[in-house]
Image: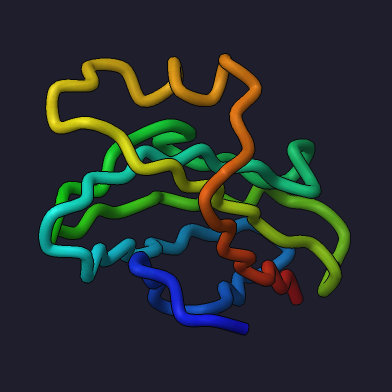
Length: 114
């Protein structure tokens, strides 16, 4: 897989199935490109993510808070984070995705609840 300008750390999340929280760090290595993102989950019944839409500034970083609600153990769930390059003056991170535009790249984050 080719390297992407935005990386996620940690690359996967492990939380207790009984409930838990984790933080993801998004880091943009592109010095002149701002990205908007949208987070999708394969299990919306047991996971919550804040924010769902946002920006990662050029050369900057941002955080996602992931909350696991109580439920059965699972190791096949994941977050899918979609990215699009946007202008520096784009005010709404949701708007570029509502146009049906395909993402520039996608990062998958495995979710493991034990």
